[in-house]
Amino acid sequence: MAHDLLDIKEKSLELLKDFKGTLEIDDFKKFLLVNFTGHASGPASMLSMLGMGETNSLSLSYDPMRGLYFYKILGASQELSQLFLYTKREPIMEEFFTEDPISILKDYLTQKEIELLGIGTKKKRMVHTTASEFQMLDGIKAGSGKPLQLDIDLVYDNLESYIAGYEPRSRTFLLEGNDGDLLFDVNFTPLARKDDVNLVTFDVYLDENKEIAQHAYITMDNKSKIKLTDDVKDTNVQNMLYCLVVPVTSFNVP
Image 1 (cartoon, rainbow, N blue to C red):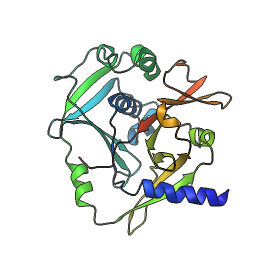
Image 2: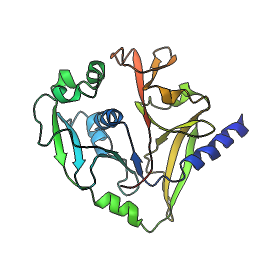
Image 3: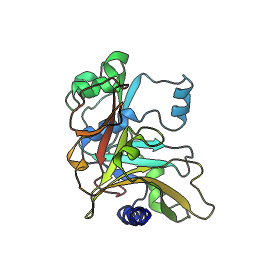
């Protein structure tokens, strides 16, 4: 078993070798779900845990120069722990939208998905921001002067452990591979750093049967039973965990 996990680690690093800090997502619906479920990341997450700083808006950022929607995930250290997610498409609105966002989101998300996000009950508004991102992308292209080193933190032997983990996962990224599809998550931890390199670590699980990519969600009930599904059916978070499967199109820097 130990040998098998070491083999998965090497396969994972080979699939992740072109990672630079950017993830291109081809599916706009998946991008929306990651964007709207990930707003409490970085410092905002800490404020949320303390019951402070909760926002009543959903933000969509559009870069007109590059023709894409983008979203930045910040970790504990802004120097190292950043992910730039983007999807290429035309803007879905031209001006700031401050009313009930359901009228727009219903064209892309199901009613159950909207309920799962808590949008209808919290009366959140959606803000459409038009801006061009320079600092992070230029920094990725230029490099920080330190080489980027990729490593695997945890290799999971089964899907149940990967989904439950130390904390339940609300989403996982997926890369297609010849020997199986890689489920991975980027770790944001101040411990993942070295003086001479920028160290990025991942949690991984290899789907050797290549079944997961065909579905939208991995679900786990309160008895830790796993199922693959395309629909949200139970929005009671105490009954069912939904882990969104997000295929990554490329690691290209736009």
